[in-house]
Length: 125
Image 1 (tube, helix red, strand yellow):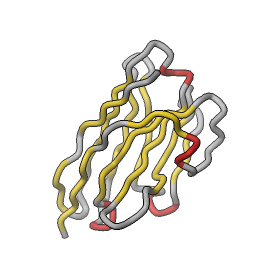
Image 2: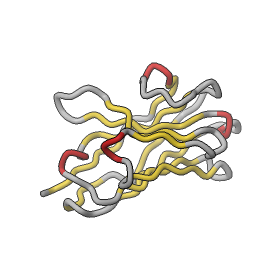
Image 3: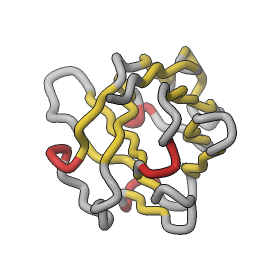
């Protein structure tokens, strides 16, 4: 069982930056691939980025490539999402999620077994 708690959301102007954090419980954090998803009002949950257990492989949706960076610190059981050059269309509730070692970069949310409660990101234009 993995428990995930996101933080770092808030209000930012377009063009600004935010860093989201997701703290995980448990002693096997490095065995999980970690991902970030987002959901805007009236829209389906969308894959944003993911990172392998070792941190050696990262995956991004095209719309955030070059602007967002996912990283992890296995010693701190934490995964991060650095978001730069934010746009109004990035506004959403951002969710952290954990997948097993089988994860190979799918954007399918069903690959992820554990989810956090979400953190709100608001981008003003």
